[in-house]
Figure (tube, one colour):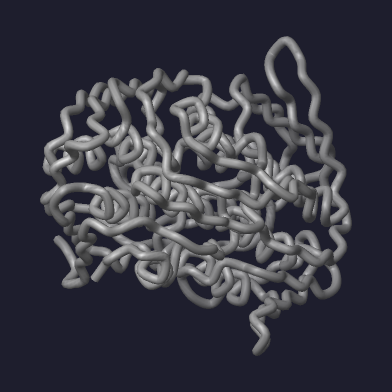
Length: 441
C-alpha cells in the first residue's frame, strides 16, 4: 500500500548556503514529556514541529498537561508533577513515533491509570515486548496484540517496584522507558548497558532536577535514577537534529563544488557516529563555535564537497548512528571502493526493515551491494551511480530522504514513493534543499 505523494530528485549543480535544520526530535519529545511531569511552566525554544513530536504534544494534553504554542513558535508546558497525570478519555495515537510510544509506556507504567495506545501502520509493526517485559517486573500490566505489538493497553502499577535491569540489546528507548518508570517509583531503579547508547534522557532529567547517577562497573554502564523527585520546570533550547543534518551533509559531500553551513547542530557523543564515520571516509567537515546548551554539546558545521573512500564501520559504533545508516549507504555509493557496515540488526525493527529497504533501493539504482542478517556491504563508484530507480519507502522518512539525496548526484533521477512520511521528522525538506540548489519535485 502506498500514498499518492511521491517526489523525484534530479541531478543538481553544487549546493550552497546555510541550512537551518529542524530541532532535535529526541530532545523535543523529552521536553514535552518532562515538562508535563514538572512543577511550573517549561518554555521550549526551537522545538521540532514534525508529526511525531506533535503526536507527543497531543498525548501530553490528553494526560492533563497544558501544552500550547505561541505566535513566536515557543512552546509552553504547564506540568502536573510526578505521579500527577490523569487517565485519558480516548486512545492515544502515537503516529509513527517509536520514541513517543516506548518512553510514554514507561511514564504511564508507574501511574495507577489505564491507557490505550495505538499508532500508524508502520508503528503497529514494531516490537513493544522489549519495554513491556521490564515494565512487568516493576508491576505494570501491558496487554498487546499478537507479537507484542500495538495497539496495546498499559495498566499502571498501584505500587511500582524498583528494579535492576540489564539491557538485552543496545536501545536508548528501552533504557529511557525504564528510567522514566522509575521516576514515580520509590527507591532506586537501575539500568545496565554493555554498549553505550544516547543519553538525552539522563542529561535532560538532571536539567529538570532529578538525581541520576552513572557509574562504570564490571557489568557495564549503570544508570540509576532516584525515584519520586520533584521535577522543576526548566527552559529548553532544542539544538538542531544531528540525524536530520546528515541528509544535507551527505548531499553537499557528493555534489561537486558544494559548501554548506549548518548552525547549532547537536553533537552528543552518543549520537555523532555518522560524522566520525564520514570524516574517516575523507569528508571535509569542520566544527565551529562549539558550546553547551541545556547540557547538550552543540556546534556549527561547515561541509564541503569531498572525495570519499570506502571503509569498514565497526559494529560497536552502531548505537551512536543507528538511524543514519540509510544516508551513510548513499555516501558509500559515491565513495571509492567498498564500505562495510556491521552490527545493523536493529535496523530490522525500525520504522521499516531499513536494512532490506536500503539494499533494495541501492540495487534499484544500479549500486552493487550485499545484505546480510546484520551487515551491509556497498561497492561505491564516485562517478558512476546510475540512479533511475523508483524507491518503495515503506512510509519511512529516512529511506525517503536518503534516496532523494542520491538523486541529486546520480546520473538519472530517483523517485521515492510515500514521500509524505518525511513530515514526521523534517517538514519542508524538499523546499529547504531546493533553496540550496537541489531539484526535488
